[in-house]
Image (cartoon, rainbow, N blue to C red; front, side, top):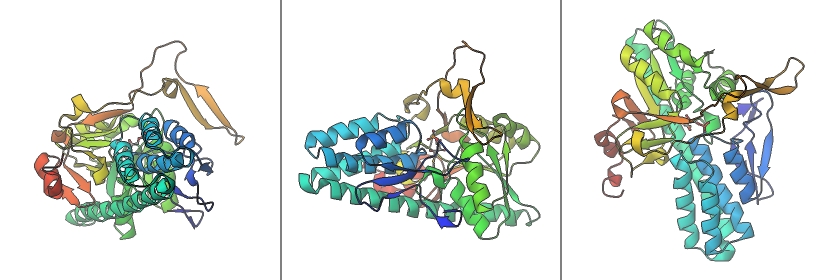
Length: 367
Ligand code: MRU
């Protein structure tokens, strides 16, 4: 995607050939800054503190992190230690573990002195595959938006509600939930996006709004609790969200608050889709509510907010009555029965084992 006319990906190799650059997402939308990751610890901190975030991007960063670790310790134990460090950064997004497993397996078949180069190249391949997957998700999901527009006689823009940020900032490029929106917009299908603010970290208000504005897509930021009301009044045509982990049965884990939107959509007959690449599917799990580990983050994300002051400086302010206990579960699970469908790089399917195995028949006997 372009920033001030210059194409950027969220992560890319540094010209020095031994480190990577990422966009520091904790500074957006007010400052666009790059950060260099040169060590395993740099990568782990970037994921843990959400300098990079979004399931696919976490996976790619972890892959590069494992590569960077090989510069310091390319032994078998070094691979295991680095993978364990990176795996411990964020527990919910399965893309992280998927990427670590893929790079680790590759490294074990490689001589120690070639491990850095091999892992760095493999991380680059994962990044390229992610871009291709997101483009394909955009093409498949964009057709849903275009069909909806045509079915209604093309009289007004299709209004799509999305939660959190599942755009290019959450992936390497294009995004998952936002890719269909970008694809439809580029085809000339009029779209208007309702952007859930997404407390506590405000990924919608800060990141999705930043992306959509940069791409010229009409949008409106709404408070997290507004979606149900707008659906009751016919002001939402379609919901599309991303996912951090989706079970083989089609249960979709995504940013906290997604489930409530799915309930409201179900009650109001609004189609509700999740858009995700194959690396987000956890084929070993069946019951998402019971089995997916939900990250509990620092309560300070709830009690404090950071923003820009009128003079351009940044400030963090307290917004909760001091001393009250807080809880901060970062994700929730939307059961498959509330989903209209799942959009993947291979097409659109029902949120069910039949639907997912239909798109990925090779997984039937693999998990
Ligand atoms: O906590 P975050 O910002 O990493 O959560 C991100 C989300 O929940 C996204 O919707 C999800 O990762 C899908 S990203 C394409």
